[in-house]
Length: 133
Ligand SMILES: [Zn+2]
Image (tube, rainbow, N blue to C red; front, side):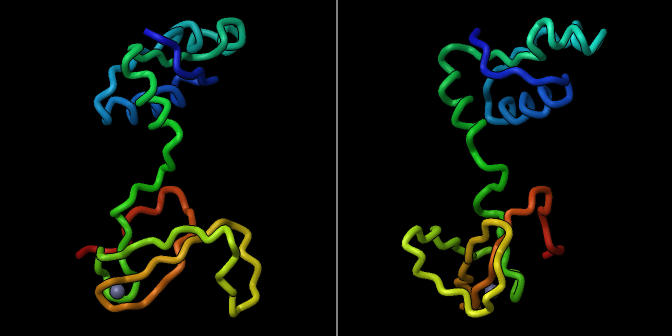
């Protein structure tokens, strides 16, 4: 087993562990009992650690680096279709914002293949579904 990451609390460690486990990666949570006894021990032992098998290490790192938003769960706000494709971010700055409103967050534009309309996606974590279909 190889230590992948360390977290200040067991909750944070288990949150990531469940993500890895759902991807089929075996995870070992270490030093959780020590940390839950006394938070000061967390500093002493370096936090709650997640360890994975050597052969799973690269996959686990890739999963940790993945954004929380999964592709394919987007739906069109106009027609509700899931046939939505996200435009890649344009580093050349080819998109001119007609509104002139500065965007405080990174947003992407998605095109609906069903109705042909476009909408902007904001990176809001935790917002999953818009409605029943
Ligand atoms: Zn649509």
